[in-house]
Image 1 (cartoon, rainbow, N blue to C red):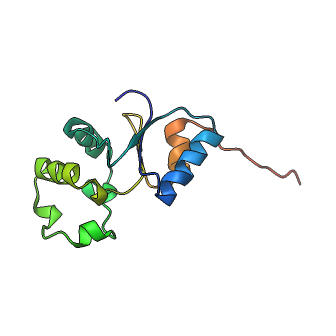
Image 2: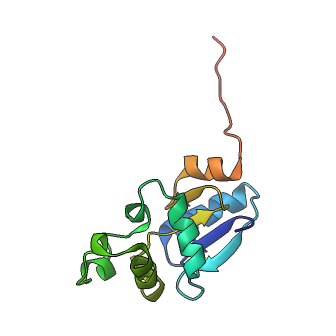
Length: 127
């Protein structure tokens, strides 16, 4: 992956907050609609390789789509899991942001600062 990829869904509150944060900090990104322009098998594989908690990090377990599954995702192989989320991208937490080396899932200001190298403003008081 090259550049900052931002997998988003426009009506998602976390996605809108993340997009606003990126724009406010003048960070360039390649925005992709998660449902219309679903990541490829290879892109999902790269995303999974960047997770620290495996599929749990990117899986939207509180969503209707997940709750209606008749499958235990923990019993799936990686390729079966990727095939499933390619068919049902609503199973994914949103947004997903990656630079190819780091991954941020959901709105996470510290993660955004880390992946974009935006310096945190330090406020110090002189006593």
